[in-house]
Amino acid sequence: MAKPLVAVVGRPNVGKSTLFNKLIGQRLSIVEDTPGVTRDRIYAECEWRGKEFMLVDTGGIEPRADDVILSQMRRQAQLAIEKADAIILVVELAAGITANDADIATMLQKSGKPVVLCVNKCDRLGDVPPEFYEFYNLGLGDPVPVSSVHGHGTGDLLDAVFEHLDFEKGEEYGDHYIRVAVIGKPNVGKSSLINRIAGEERVIVSNIAGTTRDATDTVIENEHGKYVFIDTAGIRRKSRVEEAIERYSVLRAYMAVDRADVAVIVIDATTGFTEQDSKVAGYAHEQGKACIVAVNKWDAVDKDGSTMKEFQKKLENDFSFMSYVPFLFISALTGQRVEKLYDLIRHVHEKNSMRITTGMLNDMLAYATARVQPPSDKGKRLKIYYMTQASTKPPTFVCFVNRAELFHFSYQRYLENQIRETFQLDGTPIRMIVRERGDK
Image 1 (cartoon, rainbow, N blue to C red):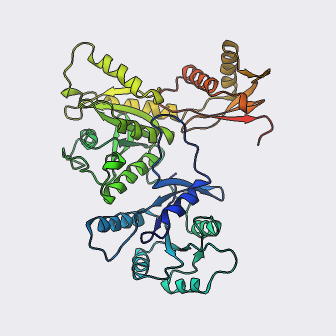
Image 2: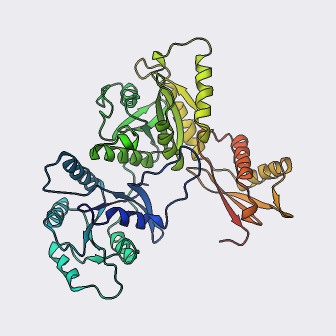
């Protein structure tokens, strides 16, 4: 189910990013200390009252500015507004209502989206100062006083946003479709691959990096099953994201991963693995998606009898933080092995959705602990009472133990490998949660 999206907008320097970090900071998911796992700070998950939604930070809006960058930032914010289910407009107490604030409020009223007015930098506790009431003149209902630095009022702000969100909103496609995000850095052939799959020119293809500005859906039904392929603008290194509009394209690529069941990470065989490929793959891994690495432009590589084997061995080392990921060598230009992509997508999707009974898990656990004894520290040995599967997508397992601090990372990795080997969970990340007996 798609999570609601909330956009944080306002003119520059009113504290949008500070507010954004405050809202997500207390409940931000733990990020694995693994190379390639990253999080783009302009887009993150926020949890409130037991429900999750996505929060997006935008560049400051200058409605009257003619500067190219500022006009692109304005366009970026408009794109965020179009996608959002609700909007937080941030204004600054000390500055009062500026002409830009009034213009932005008018723009938001025309959008028809629900807007919550946040008056930031109300840093003193107690009654709000008289100048606070000026903000009623924006015509956006009751303002909410907030201090994004100290966190005062953020609960009231989230309560106000919460009233406008529909958490029962379904995905536009049914569960019988497998949603596939085709991701990668610019100019690796993502759009060419989509066009080859669709059998027609669905996406603009150019050798100019960044041609695809939007995420587009291609619905495919064939003998292999039903698929929705989501093409995205390339994710590129942040230092090269000079245009604000392209910054938003990066955001949309991440949003496509969030919508997807399977991420096909496209890399260029002629240039090989790059650091940016690890960032792209890391986001999909962090989000728990089933993953495939498609090595495109294989037709352009000079080959002998061992080229593919050597290339794959190098890739396995490059993708060591995703040791489960399968590789497929393709050519979007000639269609080489593209047909095999369907079955591989279905296979990794099934593994990502796989449920294992508690009995089978504990049989595996008994074998694994007999083979390699759990670690001990200062005379205390780790005891694992039992293991159960908590959820799927990705497969998530809970281990109940006597003392969580004895559950060393290396032993956890060993158990993950045993689960993966026993139940053949290739193509999907695995999550492990450790609970002491008596924990709720």
